[in-house]
Length: 255
Ligand SMILES: Cc1cc2nc3c(=O)[nH]c(=O)nc-3n(C[C@H](O)[C@H](O)[C@H](O)COP(=O)(O)O)c2cc1C
Ligand code: SF4
Ligand code: SF4
Image (cartoon, rainbow, N blue to C red; front, side):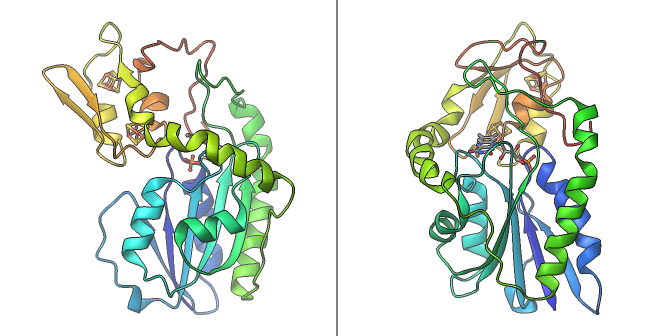
């Protein structure tokens, strides 16, 4: 097999999954090329016979960056194997994934990882690093199973259940919010040290800083990396400072 393993990871969960899966797939003479979708690549789909796309779930939907990049890089007549990571309930599922990426999904896997978002608007618990470490063995086993299933060419479709009906509601409720997420983001000038990290790290280059004034742009894919990674927690949501003692920032799966 000549595998192209394409991924997007806003805060590290999907990256960790991909880095765990990668060595498992390089066996039996397979070649596996990794493509981080937030970077520019010289990608020629002709070189591959198998396409795996791994991404997080946002509001029971596929992140915009993934839809845009995958659609541009791989023609619609090529089917995909998809691995979706999620924090609490994956109400996205195979059918919505197929529609979002506009093509046949050969196999669909979903992996419960860790929630990465806790804000005044959406206060969901973030697991402590100790609790996350405890999940490492479970996750490694799950990823090993996915790797074996892919290498056997199984058309496995995971995650079909009642949560998919909830997903329709979530997608409707979150759709506009995700598209206009950039409008809610801001920077607290009292806390910002102008370190430039958010500007450098934004996967879609959606943050512009000029003379200490920040603007957030519509290309934002709502990954929450800027909010989670800012060293002084200066990124605001709807103009509100989120106290990190109440709203824990997410620094990645094992940090
Ligand atoms: C904007 C946003 C929306 C999210 N929506 C969902 C969701 O609908 N269901 C869910 O289970 N997790 C949701 N999550 C959690 C992420 O899917 C989960 O933490 C994922 O593993 C993050 O992957 P990453 O670290 O590779 O970006 C959401 C996270 C963000 C930032
Ligand atoms: S990462 Fe935080 S402190 Fe650094 S420039 Fe961005 S908002 Fe300011
Ligand atoms: S502006 Fe923030 S939330 Fe939006 S894509 Fe950039 S880092 Fe992610």
